[in-house]
Length: 279
Length: 324
Image 1: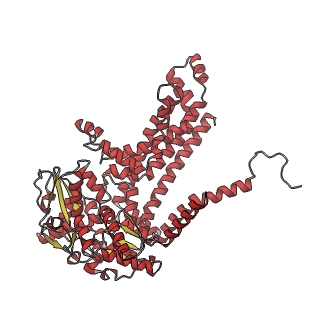
Image 2: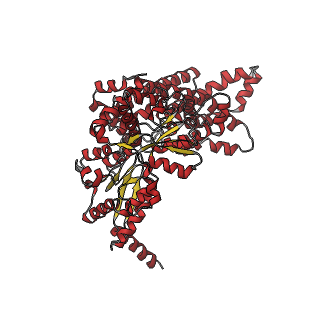
Image 3: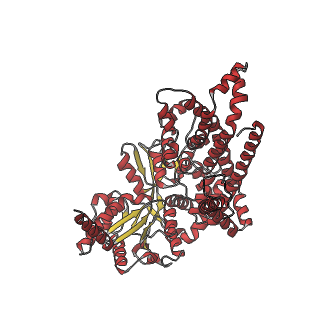
């Protein structure tokens, strides 16, 4: 009959069909918009793109966005793993509610989150006034931006690490302990390597989300050029001025930097997987 | 059993299809005004023997709203904060370039100006533009790059500096050095000032300032009227390119004309706008507007020149920040 092998390795439709659908959808949803951005940049011209990016104010905004996104993702990496660990390993009253609450930053419109955070952390807000008594200012400073980015990125780490922790048998830790390892040693040499790839994925997702975040940040940022102005706001400003080319240029810069950061994280992931020889 | 609801829904569909509808794309602080205008106009239109019209109004930042219309939002009527935003829609070919001369008063049925909102008792003693550059005074204004209202703030300060012998760019730069939060729109700035307690003075549309007093309490804020301000003319226009048929054109023109009738003008006064015809307005609404010297946008050179010079990419506003 046909040249199809008698034993198929998968129950799903063949490579041709599934790859075709995948590529088609991916093109529609991802490649076309990014292509449009590249096209807009190409129309604008490489020299004009560079002139737009190569300004003190744009550099300041890009540096601010990426630095704070990185710092927020670092916090989420540590706190998200701890949160996932607590949710999987311990039973306590209200655990299910906490577990469900982790996803709330996803469900909330980001502008609502931004306004809520600002109301809390503004100098006359509940937490902001407490911080003010200690001489700290949170809203309308870079701390405020960082806080908003932590808020929108936290679920990524927790949700990617959680299933991996569920997979780790407590026997592994017990075995390690029986063989005389200290708790710290078990954590460092047994648990951490197993969590590493998933945690890095969560880190990358949290970072990517933070870089592009707009709605929640503009309310708490203060938006002062060179100090608290994020790169996505600069793009919106260019759009308000009907400068589609300049908006695309800043978008391209963000895309390029994000892509190299995500690539670096991917390489670290591959390296850590090889080292552990696991998953 | 099923026939009656079916017939009813068919009738509803049919009437929906026949009812005339209109989309008015407007900017942020006109929500309350157009809620009243739409209701009053619908009654007025029906009283002339027409079917009840469906009038919808969309609000947002003026520039973003203009962009939606350029990109295809099917608005038959636009009522925006700046003539230059409607100019952009005209540049996209949706209405003729001379649209602003089609209706009286530069197509602005109501006007406003920029005033100061200060905290109760005016603790920092702010009386005029010159006080805004003082050390330790925090000024709240939205970002002129994203907010139409903020461009009026900026130009009013500019006009005052010109008149009082200051270097305008330096003076406006000093004001912006005192701005701790640049919101993207006028409402955001009002919230920052009134609800978050940030800043000593809010540069606001006069109508927003009165609204803030009415909504948030007269015991909390005072309005300070500077010696000179700008005549802000938020214009309205019919978007020819989005008109489906003659019936819709009649409805849209009648809607815009209604804004100029004594009833429409009375509503503008009621919502703290300065309008032209006070004949049907409540005298109390008219009396609250103090007289002050108002420069017009044409005195300063007109939007076509001012927009790129001040707010365009690399324009004077950008230089104010990079110069530091």
